Picture 1 (cartoon, rainbow, N blue to C red):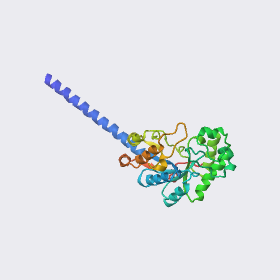
Picture 2 (picture 1 turned 120 degrees about the vertical axis):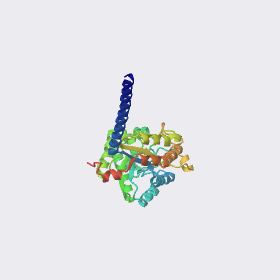
Picture 3 (picture 1 turned 90 degrees about the vertical axis):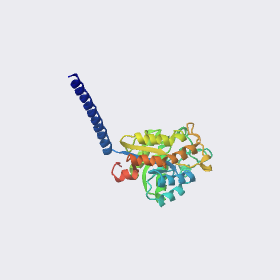
Picture 4 (picture 1 turned 30 degrees about the vertical axis):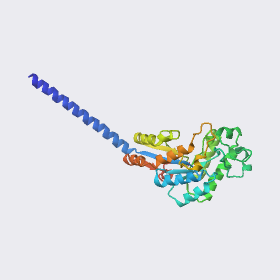
Length: 301
């Protein structure tokens, strides 16, 4: 009799374990189906195209052999024309204007697109953009001059035959005051271009900007493996380890040291076979701003 009771208890225990396993399986499967219905979507935006020849080379590699889906042009920068030619030769690239009122590099400066006497509150005594947001604001820049210069940058990109898909801003100067943000939004409506970062993207989760160079790929892999369903934005600055980029020194007090190491490491990360493997395994959708526009997911009103 005692053996029968013990046997029934063992059977009940085995059955309970079996039910638990089935329940866990069903919960996991339900989560997989839910995530399948709401995929992980990722925009990979590169900034500072046109800044140097090495940057342009890195962008071409990142677009053609990596996961880069959007590239922002620094229209006033010295290598803009080379960048524009590459963009015209690769119509599949999704290109934006990286609206700029700063030139932050030591011994490597650029002026506005407009004659600098037309925008005197945006420049120093030699007609160059200021290196930092603090210096920019100290000049008390006029919003009407900001608008004229930013409009000229967009118009110059269009003049060079480029198909534009979005706008974004260089550094933080244009985010410091409401009147500057209003100018950017006004131009976005006028040219019917979405503003990167304002299309429902989560831009914090995939941040690897200040991650040490040797850890960027590792951190990106971890983020790709753990990202939950949603639309994300990863901002990178593709570059190469060349004498040209080794000479780049950021004048911002909080600027990264050894900029070339960070930029070449970001290029390595976004062209990594391991990164592409995780994206394929998880069915992560790589999107551009052209894709969002064609899918009707951004409003220009």
